[in-house]
Length: 466
Length: 136
Ligand code: B12
Figure 1 (cartoon, rainbow over the protein chains, first blue to last red):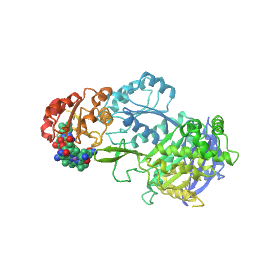
Figure 2 (tube, protein in one colour):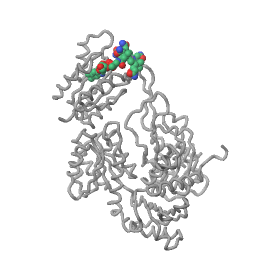
Figure 3 (cartoon, helix red, strand yellow):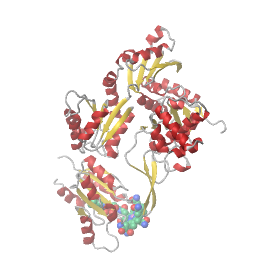
């Protein structure tokens, strides 16, 4: 066994390296350097040098990497019915760490084809029909996609009866990959095989297209989109290993300038009596990305969702002050708060993004009046008993009061129908290692779990006055 | 021959689960592929399930007396979804009060059902006819 493993996260702005001492099960050192977009190996080299290791140490270590550079993994998901296979396909793509540019359902039209051409996805996930079910739609959509002006890798995860035929609809310039159906039967979700296929395509094709090839010479194996690595870390943390017990159900929240990502690890079955679950089942490891909730690039849509009035109340500013600040943050996303008031403003934005993002992620209850009385219907996951919420990402990690931001996740008297955590404990990914440990989990799950748990325990967030 | 696919469910806010289970078991035994949506099933769920599974027939149950309201527009929704000519049956407890059976039957036929079954219809009473209707 090599004693040190380097975990690399090539982000859009920074390339971060974490060196883990495998024997001692701890972080040995960390370093980061600006990402060099044209050829990321330069930035990686710089980051590695920052670790101040000897040449020998550097050469003997294993290097594993994930990347969200070059726009991340951009995908389009396609299914038949919006609430069934299209939703399942979207969930599979999100779980593979993709940015889902758009989800299409039913038969693709000429306009849809033009839009997909414009969107320039890295991979298309094509689903539709349960196994033995509808075949017409996916065959039609394959024909439409086959005439895209530039070839795109296509992962086929629809009705198994025609998977081969669908693959054969594409000209040789398209690479096609067949995975098991994302929804083999009504009420059954099966996203793992499609996620695996997407990861494979990412490793085989996408890293070349994104100028990561040179860096891949420095890297031994495992190249996945950063969000996929974060989700793996969550899975490890929650489920543990064969030897060490996990933490149980968790929620991971990442507020960014452009999006708010929420990951939940848990079955989400009803925790209250008399509740009937409806709709598509949810994956154990579920990821949602809110493209309109961010604290810089997407701050205008965040304000729209929250309202200037609420932001004014929370900050004690006037509405016009709020609007001015929002416009500035949007126009100059690199703006940092200069005083306590501006800091509070950022904190309020983060809090609201978490609140809305988690609200959309969790399941909800609705009442149904029947002749024999009230029945509760649950759509989505019940996360009310989740005990741990973990914050990650630059905005939270650099916040002066990350707890105040993260508390947006929690159940309030005004959100009782949303199945949010009721009384969670909060943790911060203060060493910024979630993605790194997700990578390490592939090779050394035991080590990754220990390092992760120890680090998060260091950063448990509590109110001093509590 | 390929097995025919049936979508099954109890429509509306109806929770009577026993007959639905019995139907599932006996239809599976009779060689059908059964997509059972269970109780409390909305029109939308019937339509969407039938589309994805390319179903050959829809079997609606209604026991609690509100079937007439619950099924209104279902045939139209199927037409919208592009599967308007799918075979559709209904059964359960459709009689409310002292209605004549022939009256009930013609009402539900007008609502778009191909066959309508009275209370306590047993599986063996309708499965042969169903196979006939599906050309099996
Ligand atoms: C058990 C029962 C309940 C239980 C249900 C428990 C459960 N989760 O399953 C409970 C107590 C919850 C209940 C509640 C109510 N019930 Co109730 N219930 C019954 C009862 C006694 C038996 C139903 C049953 O399980 N039958 C056995 C199964 C095997 O038969 P089945 O469901 O009819 O199905 C068979 C056939 O009909 C046929 N079939 C069914 N569907 C279809 C579809 C197709 C396409 C085909 C071909 C055939 C077919 O095949 C099945 C197998 O042979 C009946 C009375 C009765 N004896 O039928 C009343 C009865 C159905 N209930 C009735 C009523 C009014 C209610 C309530 C409104 C009462 C109230 N005010 O609270 C509520 C409604 C609740 C709701 N939201 O749905 C009335 C309905 C009257 C009407 N339609 O005009 C009945 C008929 C009692 C009565 N005589 O008044 N009920």
